[in-house]
Amino acid sequence: MIDASIHRVTGTAVPIEGNDVDTDQIVPARFLKEITFDRMGSYLFYDARQGDSANHPLDNPRYAGASIMLVDHNFGCGSSREHAPQAIRRAGFKALIGASFAEIFLGNCRSLGIVTATADAAVLAQLADAIQQQPQTQWTIDVAAATVTVAGMAALPVRIKDAHQQAFLAGTWDELIVLKAQEAAIRERAKSLPYFSW
Image (cartoon, rainbow, N blue to C red; front, side, top):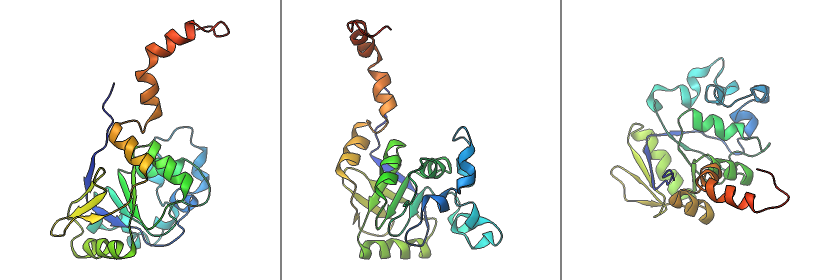
């Protein structure tokens, strides 16, 4: 079986400010007609990045190459579309840290291996300040310890949903990988079922 475990996420961060950022802002609905997710990364925050795009953090050279997003309250609310976390993942993001996430969005992130962590206001303020002061400083999210470490700072506590934390550490966050690893056992079981033709 492929080792899909996720113990740490390391990278630089970008701040995406605003409460209640919904999935239509993350990926506008008109892009849902795509038949694959291959190009979703190019649609991430598409409308917000048009026109005066220099003002959007994703287009700011200070945050170039970021793979961690720092977000606010209720991120990913609205429609339950999987396209939103697909766009985030395909744009190179591996983790999100925020005040809170919409529940279905949270589950969709876990299914794609995107680590989502919440933190209290004081920790989020420290992280936001760290981004502003040194945007190219590496952050490390330790999934088992539920901490985030930024160079020059002590490890800060975050919260990762228990079931998600266990799935990341065990490498079972991707149900397809788990099923494929059990293919031989599934085939054998199917042969013994009188109502199933393999």
